[in-house]
Every structure is written in structure tokens, then in C-alpha cells.
Image (cartoon, rainbow, N blue to C red; front, side, top):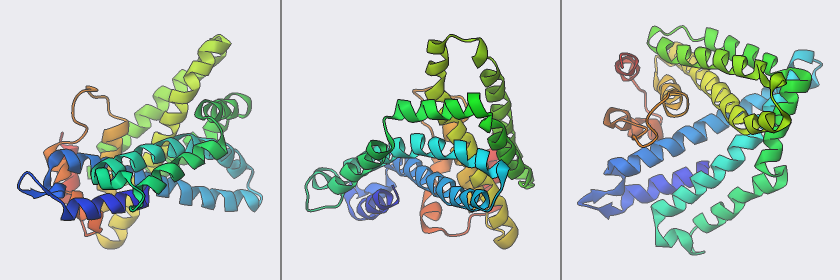
Length: 272
């Protein structure tokens, strides 16, 4: 996903259309923004999973349960999104992206390998559900998410933290009624629940990292990434409406370049 994003940014910066670089087109910027959010969320989920694994390997019983559910959640979502991001990057490059002289064709092929290795996505989602129903591992995950969110003290980020907290409670209530469902009804819950668990985890990680970056450098970049991730995947919206506003896309260049982002970027969003 990261390589696909890089290829797209480089190409869109140098290719012209409609009187300017592709990177200036709002529709393309929206695609790149979504790719960037996928990349940053996946990086946070994977690297923090490694830290959880280390604690479990050191004897932590709580982290055993956390890692038990974290692993299939990450497998279920990231292997699917890798295909979407790699395919979008091929589309950004156009015809050149399809032929073997460029890296995109290989990236698309490689993006399928994760899901092939890890098994069919429905099977991985059912493993998430098994971790919930047999071992109550979601409680460890919800506890972890809550701890990350409590770390976020920036007032301008509170609306986004509240969205995640409320979504956790709604999902907890949904899980509580699974025992009363038929097996078929239970299994149909597995994939949307696995996806939502990933988004809740990723959002809490991004917002928590954002607080750390703000505290250390007064840079609101990562808090903005977290807010945009919540907006994209956790806020209800018209399915046919654009996922990002023009003001969101105005920060894309700074997010790509990792240049500092001021508090105003988050403050204006919090007042929506």
C-alpha cells in the first residue's frame, strides 16, 4: 500500500491534465487521501501489533487475548484494502500502470498474496467472531482502545474521540445479542464486525499517536489523520456523497510531505 501510494503521488505530480498536474484535481486528491489514510492506519495497526506480541511473549495474559483477536482483525481488513489501494494506484497511472515496464502490475499481483496466504476473508472474519464468542477477546480490545483514547487530551480532538467511544459502546451492545441469534444470523455479523473492530482500533491508534506528536512537537498532523480516518470510516454519511470536503483535501500536500500541520486544521473540523 505504501509503495502504491508513493507511485501515485509521484505520477500525479508530474502528469498534466485539464490545464494542471493531476495532483491538483480534487477527485484525484480524494483518492490519494483515502489511500494515505489506509497506509497510515495499516502501519499503526501492524507496528503496534508487534509491541503487543512482545508483551504477550513476555508472559502477559491480557496481551495474549489482545493479540488473539488483533491478528485476524488486521488480516481481514489489510489484505482486502491492499488490493483496493494497489488497484487504485494502477488506475492513477493509467495505461502505463497496466504493463510490466512499471511496478503497478506487480503490486496488484502481490496485493492478492496476503489474502491467499491468510485464507478466504470470510474464514478470517469467522475467526474474529470465534475469538469474541469463545474467549471474550473483544473486551481486551475494547479496554486497549479505551486506554488509547483516554490518552488524547487535545480539546479539538474530543469530537472524534467521542465518535469512537460511542461506536465501541454500540458495537458492544450488538455483540451482546449474538447468543440469541441463529447460527446463520451470527455468521452474517462476522465480517461487518471484524471491519468495524479494525476501524475502531486504527482510529484509536492514530488519535493516540496524534496526541504524542502534538505533545512533542506541537504538530497536529497525526491528529488530523485520525480525524479524517474517523470521518471516512466511522461517521454515518450518504453513500453517494463525497467522503472528503475541499477543506480536507487542502491539507493533502502537508500530509504527504509530513510537514507540520497547525491546530487550526483540526479546530475547524471539530466545529462541523
